[in-house]
Image (tube, rainbow over all chains, first blue to last red):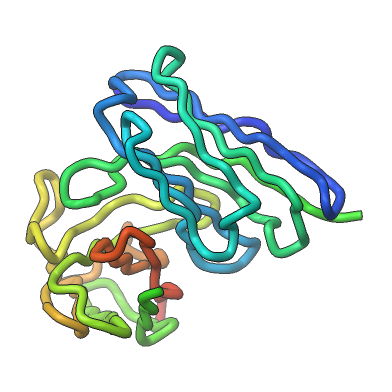
Length: 118
Length: 107
């Protein structure tokens, strides 16, 4: 059974950094594109980043480009999101999701909350 | 970036009603559009793709259509478990973008 579990969220001060992790099981990471999607409290979904299964391509939303770095460790079946220069606008629940054909995100983690506040 | 505009932002309906949500793209995205359902406190869940029509396991009451810039998501007969927020997402561009969401609640 496919399972995704995010971790690493928490409270961080403006300007700080945080590294999120997404541990996958039940499938082989290297075969799939993985996505990060976030949702600010009471707001809609915002796509953040995508990475190809072998890291052959990486894309970022303009809102995080230059501050966030996505990576993956296929040996550990894990996805990461290094977040730097955080601001209050980055406060959100961060989800990782697996992408299959048709660019469909078919499995999602439960999310991890990142709060940026002094 | 491609902007996605959903309407309405919310609607009230009763069980058995036909519900239609529209999504408009700021530029042509062919038919690269997916729809997701999200319930409070839960992760989004894929519902249907405009490109692939009905997916395996998706109830037949859900349908999606459109091409170019204008798209429609329809629930033919609203069921109790369908009260949720629905999002469209374009996948034409490598920079995926979501619509702002449509909340479907009880009338």
